[in-house]
Amino acid sequence: MFNDAGYINADSGPQPRHPAVRRPRARSQPPHESVVKSATRALEIIELFAVHRHPLSVTEIANALAIPQSSSSVLLQAMNRAGFIDRDRQTRKYLPSVRSVFLGNWIHDTLFRRGSLLRALDTLSETTGANVRLGVRNGIHVQYVHVSWPTGNPDEAGLHPGMTVPICHDALGVMLLASENDRDIRGIVRHANAVAGGTGAVNVAAFLDDLQRDRGCGFAEREDQCVPGDQVLAVRLPMQLGVSAAIGLGVAAGRLPGERAGLLRLLDVVVKDAWGA
Image 1 (cartoon, rainbow, N blue to C red):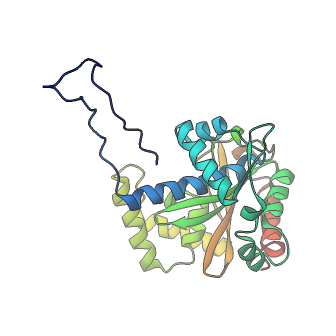
Image 2: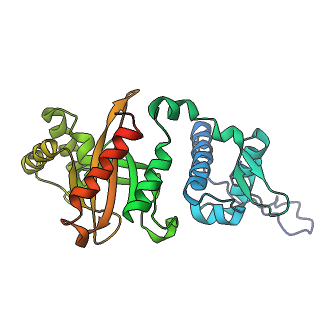
Image 3: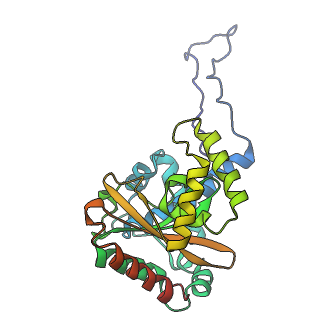
């Protein structure tokens, strides 16, 4: 579907002894890889709307995801036919349909019985003037599944939903590991160090000592890996439906330690009110 390989015909004159010259075909991907790639891109498009929160054109989507505009157009048309994306005929811009809205509602309502976590995170961001991110563990990384910005403009920060950060260097990652036993944590840290290849490796014993302190405090504070000059305060959310997640609040380092206690109280309110803990 997305294969751009084609043919180059030989000169139009009769050439009985020389058949038409064809451009060698690019090595095609196995069918299952192509399907997975298309499915991943479709989900990335839905996620992109969650970041920008307004209709987007084909060009805007293609540029944001760094994929060919022709491929974006074909995929959007397919999603539109399936009812997951709506298209405004006047502006020619796309927006997730009502069908998309209801895809994960049952999970949200099960996890967040007391209200909308999205609204709570947005409110926390506006109240504190800080970037707020919700993260889950993805192997030896933390993956941000939602990010709220105090200005509502995602282009002002160097972080976005879907991005991954090394788990040992991220405050959210530390809190996600805090629920694991020390033996498993040692294995995770050693694996992360091996993958890092010396760059960004951490001392296992020192990491466990710091983690023990963070367990006692109930929060972790680390340098923001995405926004230079910021620190991140993170707390873990109680596990529900097998989901382990953490919330991080990114603030300018100069605001700490003066505002630390107040910011942690606000994080605690989100955990209790939105998550239902």
